[in-house]
Image 1 (tube, helix red, strand yellow):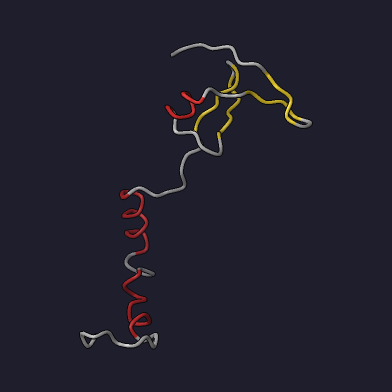
Image 2 (cartoon, helix red, strand yellow):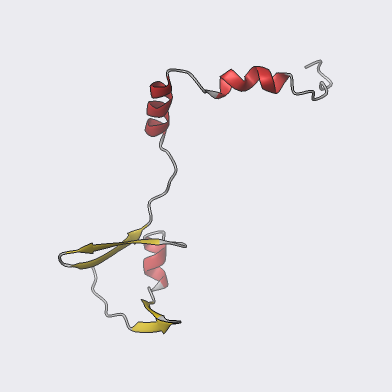
Length: 89
């Protein structure tokens, strides 16, 4: 891991640091960072995505026991009044 000195700059009534673009790309940082105060200092890391993994999605579906799945809503979708297509569906 490289060490680099960054200048603290004024941003309105606050202070901030500018991160090098190579670092932003390497860690896929876009709009937000998570800041964690530790005994050693401040840790900045990419904010974790709220997206579920396949494992998380399957675990959530298993916990529901099949209730509330999209297939339960399929009959409502079929009867929504949309015209049939050229294939008789």
